[in-house]
Amino acid sequence: MAKKGHKSRKGVGEFYDEVKVDTLLSLTPTARESLDQQAKSIGISRSEVVERLARGLIAPPGTVPLSKEERLSLGKF
Image (tube, rainbow, N blue to C red; front, side):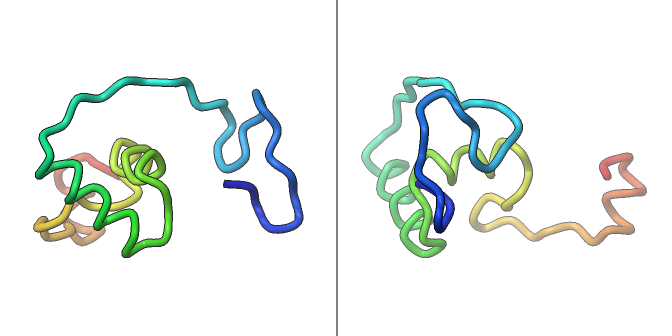
C-alpha cells in the first residue's frame, strides 16, 4: 500500500528502511480468520499485521500491554 501521494515501486521500502521479502506462512483457518479480522479492524493488510506483530509495534490480541516501567524492569525497551 503506497503512502498518500506516492506511487509504490517494487524493490523500494515505503514504511521501513528495508524491502519486504516474500514469505510463506501456513495457518489454520481459525488463525487466518483472526488475522483477517485484525487487519480489517486496523485498516491494514494481513502482511502488515504480521510485520507489526513481529516488530512489537502492536500487541497480539488478548494480551495486556506492559507499561513502560514494566518493560524497563524486564530489560525490554
